[in-house]
Amino acid sequence: MGNQLNDVLYLEVTQSNLMRKNILETAIVSAKILKHYELFNLLRQKDSAVVQELNQSFKNLRGSFNLLAGVKLPAVKEIEQVIRSEYEAFREEKYKPSLGKIKLDQELAIKRSKLDQEIEEIEEKLKRLGF
Image (tube, rainbow, N blue to C red; front, side):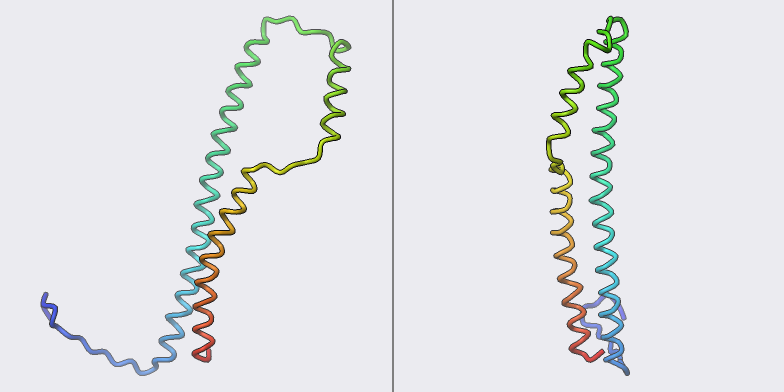
């Protein structure tokens, strides 16, 4: 056995069906692990984006508090009616899910469908072998 391409190695497989079954089951497990890993990476990316957005919101909020520090605010009775009308308008609106949630669900569905198809194909091969 050297570095030559003409070297041939022969191997005897005594239980070929069992070997096929083990290989296909390992492929199923590997595909499922890959599916979970891709889901984890996608969620981690979305999580970091949300955390960055939240940090930016807090930074903006701190800046707003600093601007309000020297300002005399109106009395509560003067703005109570405005708050009440805004609250009523908010209550009348129907909840609409954010586009980020919809996009995440669509991306996950695409990733799931590709890997699930591969897993189903491998499971079908196992069934055809009679396992």
